Length: 239
Image 1 (cartoon, rainbow, N blue to C red):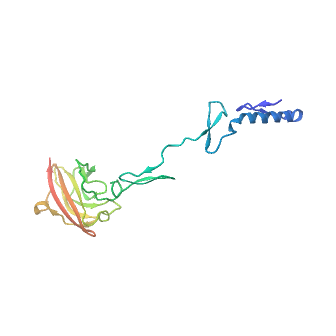
Image 2: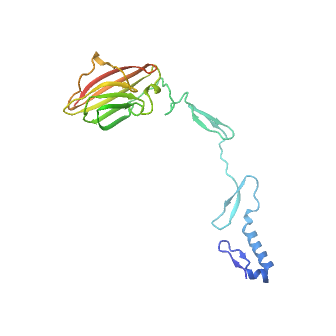
Image 3: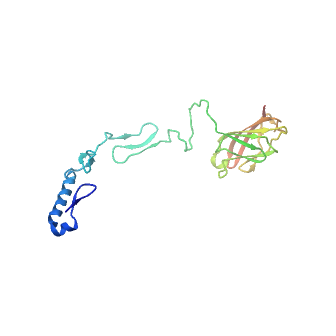
């Protein structure tokens, strides 16, 4: 005798049916399949099958939902858009600032801008690399252990010269912590090459300040290829 399947309850012929009543068993199976898949019949162009209930193989043909957007217009600050096919929008960097494109801002008001600051439990000694792609303020919180060199660069793999154009300026502040013995920067470099800053008041510092935080501020102006003028101030004592 035929038995039924676990999933759909179809009458499946058994080996004995094929000998005794094979034609009837096969016909019954075919009818079961035809009945089970009746919902797949019909439909028309652009229609899709969707579940009509929780019952197995209970489907219904329906027209796929279509949105009501007929056109995408790029507004102020955007580019792209369109009225047909696949469209996209992008920031128009000619009029809108973004985070990655080098741009010149004009007629903008900055209200209390935040500056990236690196706070490091490091003692100044040897060469201190000031990575201007990382921060505008570098604060060493551990007491300096010797006089040191201050080297300004983009980062370990990028020169400051390569990220600045002639006529541009960038500012930096280095905060050096001193204990009972005061130390200070005695050599200044940009991309590993020595520069001589022009100091506020006309005199370079000859010592640091003991038991304090010394602040050194720098304005670095690019005047040509790998040529810079550095205006410096400090050591300003904070204690």
